[in-house]
Length: 127
Image 1: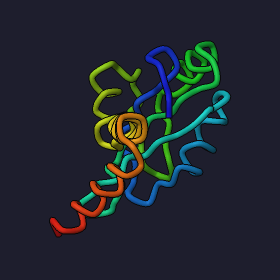
Image 2: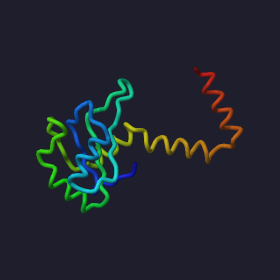
Image 3: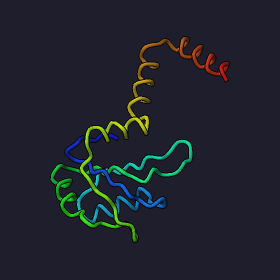
Image 4: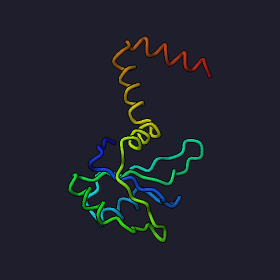
């Protein structure tokens, strides 16, 4: 999920039951949404209670930001802020998006198939 700081809102205060579809539908009433990401806690398997909403264009982002005061999902009032660089990096780390891409690319491009097979076998022996 690629996003930049000029098209992404950070939304906190989500109810546990909030789905990507529910958040997307809510914000599509304000502007054109490109994507929504709700990070999941790896230990509990539950949503972390916040989301990143990425808009189609910076103009759509600004429109949604201006209209998002006092927005609610169900009966719960949401806190909506402009995503900042620190929070964006946190999302990438939580979701392992960039790390997984880099590791795959490194493994795929940096090793022969035979070496990758040996590495997989070694990982199996560690367990």
